[in-house]
Amino acid sequence: MGAMNWGFKKSLWVFHLNAGACNNCDIEVLDCLCPKYDVERFGIKLVGSVKHADVLLVSGSVPRKVVPQLVETFEQAPQPCAVVALGSCGCTGGIFKDGYNFAGPVDKHIPVNAYIPGCPPRPEAIIDGIVKLIGKL
Amino acid sequence: MTTTIPIGPFHPVLEEPEYITLEVDGETVIGANFDLGRVHRGMELLAQEKTYDQDIFLVERICGICSASHSWAASLAIEDIVGCEVPARARYLRTIVHELERLHSHMLWVGLAGHIIGYWTVFMWGWKYREPILDALEAITGNRQHYAWYRPGGVRRDVPDEIWPNVLKIIEEFDRKTDMLTGAILDDPVILGRLRGVGILTKEDAIAYGTLGPTARGSGFDVDIRRDEPYGAYSEVDWDVIVQDGCDCLAVAVVRLLEMKESVKIIRQCIEKLPGGPIDAEVREVPRGEGCGHVEAPRGESFHFIRSNGTNMPERHKMRAPTFNNIPSFRPRIKGETISDALLIFAVIDPCYSCTERLAIVGPSGEKLATSKDLLRLSHEKTEELRKNS
Ligand code: SF4
Image (cartoon, rainbow over all chains, first blue to last red; front, top):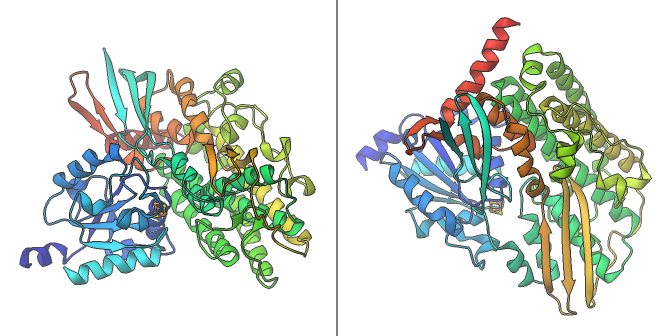
């Protein structure tokens, strides 16, 4: 894990992918960036392209139409890149797991390093998840 | 030569994700096309496989920002079939949560609009002022979002009276902040320059496209379910429907800013008048029949139709959210505008964050001309230019 540790020692840049989420998980991610929680203090930053990211944060229950884009995004990410499944939807499919268009959850398509459950997870939970992820790697 | 710009491929910010392709000629946009379906989760069929009580939890999850609206509309539809009278206390409690939701939704939009035109301060302020509202919602319902608050017949929990002074304090503070923010936005020549006269949607078009909510009211189309078909406690409190005739992006922004003040007014009166008594008319069974419910969500009318066959699950549950009506009005708005305004005009219909991160301009042969970042940069540059010249 030497290379992993070296890669994650400094600021973590996060790319957030919304794979069929109801929007709340995404809002809570943005909330983390805002004055109340302000994760940029710790160098955690949202970036606009997965090519710059250390962490890929995936929320949503992954409907069928999104699968190719999810896999493609993961393949474009520079390795090592940690994947975090966000919310009940991202972890298990949650309330949508019986839907006919459900093709997830996230870990069916790409390897996941950490799960943050909750519907939606509170900003504190998201921050805690990321911190635990850093500790684990 | 026309070039095609895809916006997307998926914009799952709301229940209706959009994949939009813009046709541009040089700088000017001449057309737009839509492809929906990337956050299609099979809601309606799922709803038909769950009991009425479970349904409420499902429809909450249609959209994160309108969860109170959808669960209220579904509850209204069920109550319509049952024919039960909702107790007064429940009606007031429902109204309070619904209006708090509108406050945080509109504030979120103000922040995103600020982000798109390159005003990070507006974004940070907007989202900072929004946090106390989420705290108030948490104090009342137990969760920041997805409140699980509505149920057929009433609300799920009663609220102790001790929390109201705190909620009142939060909304008074919010009211002051909104005044300050409204003043700052409407006084700023650069923001005005970016918004005024941009993205015109005439009243005729607003009606023809069937727009709803602030999108319609910004074009002088006076429609608001809260007044037109009162539900909850709206007919018992004093408030106004905000309508603006500007038809441009500025008018929609003003509608949203002023609506926040109206919401504060409604919440304040509801808390003052809050009656005692039961919070729930127990719904034991749902007879055969049909019912519908509609409420004014922050973005317009949410509509739910339920047909019951006498069992504990609906036979048909149809839902329609306002953005579905509002998206097509992007077309007349964008025609003839420049690419640097496209993001802003899109955001006027509806907040859209994911989409702004996933934009790309491609030429006819498919080569990439610009990415979302470039579009955002174009938008920011235009603001800079205005700033220099003003
Ligand atoms: S986990 Fe909950 S909040 Fe997150 S996307 Fe799914 S339904 Fe929405």
